[in-house]
Image (cartoon, rainbow, N blue to C red; front, side):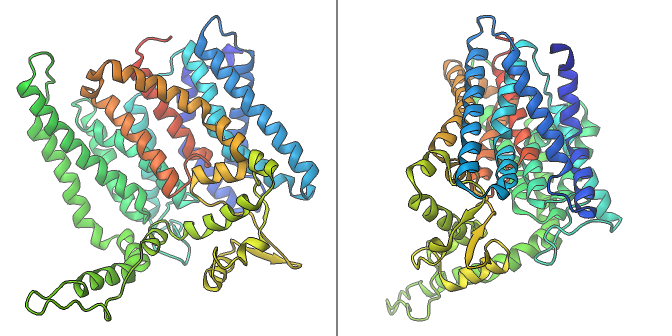
Length: 481
């Protein structure tokens, strides 16, 4: 099957991701389909990689052997999960479970497939490739916004332009993962015009989109690169073994230009309006609370009665966009489930009547809010939900149980441990910006997965975490094992 799979084909598949998401958006907005075009094409790609891994000979390569075992464990788990669902739940809802498991397990299956192919025929994932991919995404958002033909990021619930794409959260997460490679590419003298243009459009689109995640990725990456090169400059001064040649003044000038541009645009952006709308009252209460809690040095009296106190739980709930409320409901369901459900998961169509009426879990106002948002539906005295928590690691644990969680992360953790071991043996890797940016990118993606979701359980986004992981592996292990 090797002749049907090549490095160029995989690189092309990376580049067409924005086009795939664009076509999917236009089809979904104009046709009522139970399964999207993007999910179909990505599912076929995933299925092909499954077959590829299973028929590929290991030739005494231990990593390929392990990957085949990891994939086999995933497939066995999926088979048990579906059989259990068919015989123990409403069979008319099996499509929901199948769709959920395809979206969730896309990440580990495709990771196994591309890692095995990369062991045999190295996949050339360059910074330029990832910059071009981001540029396609951001250009579509930019063109749609300036021509006033865009779709709203949050419908009537907020501000922002998602361009011609569909889900602002997913597109924002993709941008967040690709941004570090674009910003770091500005440091290099190669393709200066392309990188400058890509960065300019990226800044504008990040502000247009109206979500926090790409904005934080852009600002955080910029600040990190400044700090990184200042530390590297100090290292150069004292090191006699290995020196890096770079222009610190030029790098700081470029990064500061990005930061200043962000600061100047921010007050006029949809992102600022969304933050003001969603967090304005909370921020004001925190400020009032701080001012009220200041002790008058003359009277030593603290005005506690007038202070508008804000609890930590309230802050966490707001920052995570009320995801913790929903997480508590699903957690309660998982804790009250049978041992089989704890092993294999509670699935994607969950009956939660008992859980939502538990006073410790949710109050009447929160219940009303979730019902209004369509997250909880009551039909014929049965209360159920199909919505995910959008905190990916928790979704995987509760929806697929302990066994599903273990087989899900087995391959990814093995690759990360291999990389970590090599870096520890040779700390000079930290002098390579490409390696450091890949590390930061993976940590960033996992952090987004646990706080905003739409990474591990979204095929369109998870694919770019896979590319970052394989790119880092190739940067560490220069030769194919």
